[in-house]
Each structure stands twice: as structure tokens, then as C-alpha cells.
Image (cartoon, rainbow, N blue to C red; front, side):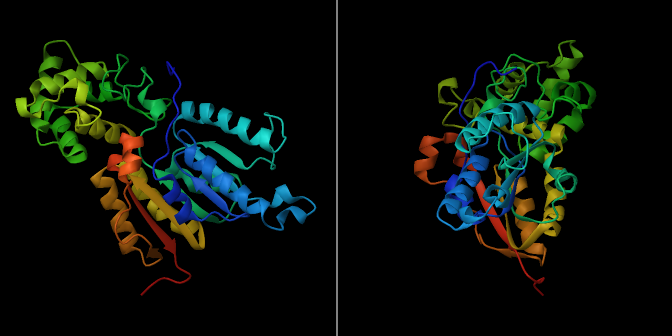
Length: 338
């Protein structure tokens, strides 16, 4: 359970809206709902266009409105954000909070974004106008002491987005051999000290003190780093904590994040309408490389960000977590480019 609530700040919000360019009757998928900032902004843009168009001259205008299909693997994120957004848009549309019919502008789905095909089929939607992924952690996940995303968390080292399935990170560290742990940390975290860290984890396990919590793992990593790599705790918000790459690697492995990303990049082009746009915000060089290559190698895509879009200095000051974000966008061609 989340110990306290936070307000998640959506990254590159205006850029997302500019690239998606929501239409009053469009259908958009937010594959990573999180705190709901992007979904909320898309719906508000749709409604703003409706207010200045002739759509309200229709007999049943709201049935002709655009919608957002909001997906997330994290059931806690779905529950918390759905409650907030239903309150905002139900009040605005003078609908009761329990309204689940076609009049509500958002469809919520507890699902991994790699299963967007199945979700669209269940909703009887053939094609969409835009698709968004924000691959970063939400503020609510970071403050949840029972999930282990934060380095100072005293709860179990879980790191799963969907706590109803799969193996936790602490179970992974208990099961894998030392060299397998090192390979994960190096491959997914690009951590140069991966073998040193894996050795320390294996030594703890051999001594009958296996890693169980996030704070235990973070302290162990820091203690095994060369002195010049150690960071004063007061500066963690500015500098990169020595534990960052290892936590990132374990999270990617536990959730098969790269596999999900590769899968959805193959699926979405078949569901987008011609001129539909896909926008992806990544925070890891491996993710960014997968997105870049997928856009370049599929003739269906017209790349609209030759170079990744990054946050402004002003945004980074407001939201330091945005500093490593990279946005790439591509538009589906009417016909494949040869």
C-alpha cells in the first residue's frame, strides 16, 4: 500500500500533445497510465477542440467524442488514477462518479501494453489515431514502501509493475547464479561494476543473509563501489546514485520491459490509422535504441523526430526525474516507404 500520496508530474507533456495532436473524435491509447497526467491532458485537448467546433450541434454529441484507452500493468496505479480522473471528468460532464458507459471519455484497462491488440478487440475498436508510452516510473511507485522501487525502501525488493504475476527481484537474486546476476546488471544496466556487485550479492546469500529489501541492496552496492563512485546521500537528487543502474537492470529483467517494448512496436503499426502517430518516452539507452531502430527499419513509419526530443532546462529544474527522458515520434504512412 502506498504510504502517502504524491502528484506525479508528466514528462514532456506539451511535446506529447503537440505530436499526438488529438482530434475531437480521435481514439488514443496511453499504454502507461501511471499518474494519469498525459491521459488527462489528451482528454482536455479533445474537449477544448469540441468546445470550439460544431460537434455540440449534434443530437448526441458526447457519443461522437474522442476517447482515451488508458492501460497500465500496475493495478494500484489504475485504481488510484481512475478514481482521480473519474472525479475530474464526471464533475465536468455532470455525470455520476460511478458512470461506466460510453459517455465517459476514458476506458481503463489493467493490462500490459504489449497486449494492446487484445484490449482493443475487447472494446471492439479496430483502429486508433495515436499511441503513447511513457516508460519511466511514476512518483507513486517510488513512494510505495512495499514495492522496492525507491533505494531507501524497507519493504521487500519486489520491483514488479504487476504484483499479481511473475517473480520478484529478491526471488530472482536468490535463484540465479552469480554470473547470471552479473550478466543482467551489465546487459540491462550497463553497469561497469556488475561482477563486483554480483559477487557481493552471492557472498551475502552464501552467508545466509540473502538480500531481501531495497535499502539492503542499495547499501551493499554503495559499499562495494570505488570511493570516487560513492555519492553523498544529500546529493542523490542531483547526482546518479551508485545503485541506480543495478535497480534499473533488475526492474527491466523482472518485468521483461524490453520484450514488451519490442512486441508493441510490432503491433501498433497494424492498429494505427494512416497518419496516426506513435510517441514513446524512454529513460534508458537500451529502450531508446530499440525505439530508434524500430522506427528506422519499418517502412510504414515516417519519422517526425530525427533526433530525440529532450526536456528543457526549465522542465528539469521543475522535475529532476525528467533529466534522462528522450522522446521519439513517428507517423504511419498511407503506403509503405520503399
